[in-house]
Amino acid sequence: MRIAVAGAGIGGLSAALCLARAGHHVSIFERARALREIGAGIQVTPNGAAVLGRLDLGAALDAAAIRARAVVPTDGHDGRAIARFALDQGRFPYRFLHRADLVALLARAATEAGAALRTDHTVTGADPVVGRLSFAEGADVAADLVVAADGLRSVLRHALTEAAASFTGQVAWRAVIEDVAASPEARIWMLPGRHVVTYPLPGGRLNLVAVREQGDWAPEGWDHEDDPDILRAAFADAAPELAEMLARVTRVRRWGLFRHPVPKRWHTDRLVLLGDAAHPTLPFLAQGANLAIEDGWALARALEGDGDLDSKLRRYAELRGPRVRRAIAAAQANARNYHLSGVARRVAHAGLGAIGRVAPARFTARMAWLYDHDITSEWPAT
Ligand SMILES: Cc1cc2nc3c(=O)[nH]c(=O)nc-3n(C[C@H](O)[C@H](O)[C@H](O)COP(=O)(O)OP(=O)(O)OC[C@H]3O[C@@H](n4cnc5c(N)ncnc54)[C@H](O)[C@@H]3O)c2cc1C
Image 1 (spheres, rainbow, N blue to C red):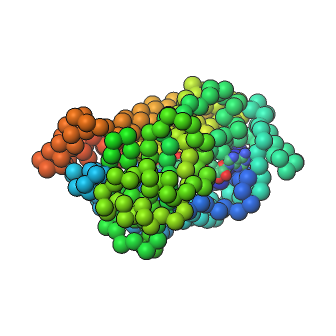
Image 2 (image 1 turned 90 degrees about the vertical axis):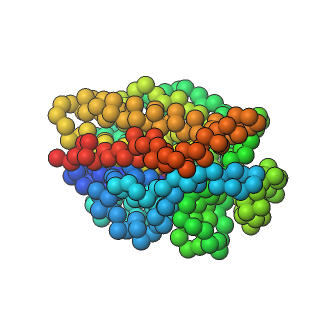
């Protein structure tokens, strides 16, 4: 098929790679002039690594990433590690890397597989019945299938849903700090109504994402410059080690976290949703990109099956729907658990500490549905 992918983000590029390898004629249309990812880290969890490994990207990922050893829930007031759960015991690695490196790696693999990447193409709409994409820059493109991978604020999603996003009452900041020596662990610094996640990136950098509950609205989209002092003031009572990291932040972005209902239907005659365009998730489980990578594999496999295009696309959505909904719910639950206060906080931290001491495998077992899921075995290429 001639497949037009809208958006060269993590989902669009993964899908393009899988589809091109499956023999389709793939073009990717990206609004940016160049694939220039904003400075930030990303966690590629074992379920995403399973797909990227099967696509022969394991070695390239290792060259660009740090392998994670553990996740460490930490008391954000006194800096005490409440527990330490291993992340290096599974079948597939858990990695920390720079988003730009992941995007570059996927773009290289997709183009080597034959996909054509067209930057400076802003998609303005698609005819969902005949599969025609239109662009702000002019000249429509016809395709047998349009893959809408245009992210969180997808324009193409409107072909399937008009449901509005709602503000979660949480704002987030992200920053990268230079010249930091940190162990290969993700630390979750928990404070009442707030938390900070830190993890190292190659090149002596540290990625930091901070979240605070707040009633008033902040804009969505994660490229709004903010004053680092506002971030520091929000965490003025942080443990000395965290306060020291925050003191080193020189540039920070802030944005509002919104909940987007997942549409019931993910496809029309010739258009299908993928990644954040289908199922944006809150960033509290590090799954948005990993699920988008899984989507790319699933879509390519669904198209290999028997039947007409409608039944193939339905099968893709039916397979992905329950899993992404479960991940979205789990991410939402994490926000609640990280932000507890008073007695609930003390009880939860004591419980977490006890699991960490006597039965850390319980944590691993609780996450098995997510991390141990290997969509490439469940749905192998034919
Ligand atoms: C701070 C933060 C940390 C995160 N950390 C993690 C993590 O550790 N692990 C994880 O799995 N996920 C993480 N995520 C989520 C993850 O980044 C997204 O879920 C993932 O990038 C979704 O991929 P996508 O391809 O659907 O969208 P995107 O990667 O956002 O790509 C969309 C692409 O479409 C392009 N585009 C948009 N509109 C148009 C248009 N009209 N025409 C043409 N092109 C267009 C955009 O320029 C972009 O290149 C994080 C998110 C945030 C905000």
